[in-house]
Image (cartoon, rainbow, N blue to C red; front, side):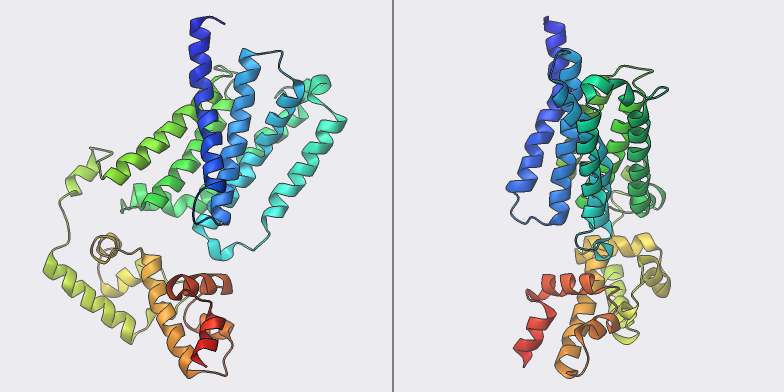
Length: 351
C-alpha cells in the first residue's frame, strides 16, 4: 500500500476506531449509566462496525466475507438504536421498559437467518441496490424510516434552535447533532453510486469530530456562529426585570398551580405571563439556572410531598396524576431525582 492509500485508509478508519473507543467508554466507564447511555453506546458501536467494514473492504478486498456480513448486519441496527436513544432522551416518560426488544431482537434473528441461508460470499448481489438487490433496498428503506422517526421526535429542538432561536442545553445540542450526523452518514452511503463508496466512512469521521468540536467549544463558552447570535450576546435580562419576572412567576404557580396541567408547555406559561416564550426560557436558563422541565417538576414534587403528608387514602398513582405528572414513570423518576428515594419509601418514612 503506497503512502497516499495509507493516508486515505487512516482518515477513513479514524472515526470508526474512535467510535468504538467512545462506545466502550459509555457502556463501561461512565459513572451514571442508564438505558439512554447504553443505547448511545450501542449506536456508536454499530455505526463504527459498519464504517470499519467499509474501510477494510475497500483497502483489503480479500477480507473475510463473514466480517462483511457482520458489518452489513450492524447497519440494520443503526436506525433502531438511533430511535431508541432519541426516544429515551426526549420522551423518557413514554418509553416502556423492555420496548427495545421489539426494535432489536427481530433484526438480530433476521440477520442470523440471512447470514445462514444466504451468506454474503454466495449472495452478495442481494446487497446491491440494483434489480434483485432485495437486502440492499430493504436496508435503504429501513434505515430511512427510523431516521425520519428520530427527526420527528427532535423536531421541537429543531424549531427551538432554528425557528425560535432559543438557547439550547449541551444535551440538546449533542442530541440534535447526533441525528443530523446520522442523516449525513446515511446520505453518504446511499449516494455512493454517484460519488465514492469511501464517502460514507469519511462522512462518519467528519461528523464524529465535528460533534466533538461543537461540544468542546460549547463547554468552553465560545461563540460557534458569528452571524445572528452575536447581535443578542449582550442582551441579558436586567436585574430589576428578572426580579419582577421571578415574583410574577412564583405568584402564578402558587395561586393558579399551572404545574398541575400534565400538558403544560413553556409557551403556555409565557402566555399567562404575557411575555415572549424566548424571554421566559432565557430567564429560567440564565437567572434560575434550570430548564423548564426541571423548574416545573420541582413544583410538582413539592406538591406531591404535601399530598403524601396529608392524604393517606390516595394511591401514589393518583397523587402523581393530581400533581401534573403525565405518567407513573415520569413521576417516580422526578421524585427520586429530587428526594433521593421513591414515593413509596418516602411515604413509609412519613409514617
